[in-house]
Length: 99
Image (tube, rainbow, N blue to C red; front, side, top):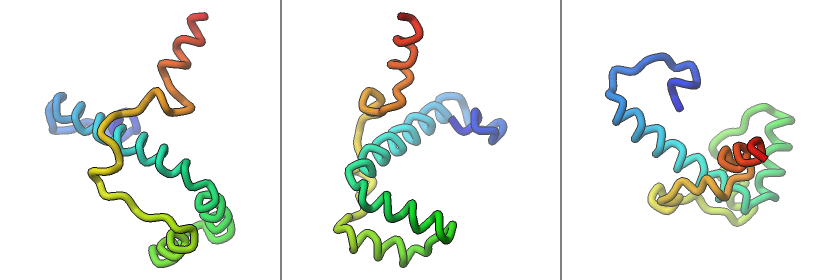
């Protein structure tokens, strides 16, 4: 993932790079699915960012309190990749192309 995003080569071996890519995908996928359960917070965050482009950590924490949300511990974000639950599933796109 990192290399495909233009970060260049790495001194790490292929197995470590693959492990890192899988872990990043797991975190991103599960964080996305978790965030989708809080649309009002995301809507307000989007409005705030459109108005000011950035918000402080304190402002973000205030939004979490306002909407009754909590941050997740690393371990609770998910243990699987959950690709099948994403709306932009590559496997699904490939099967549509084959039809």
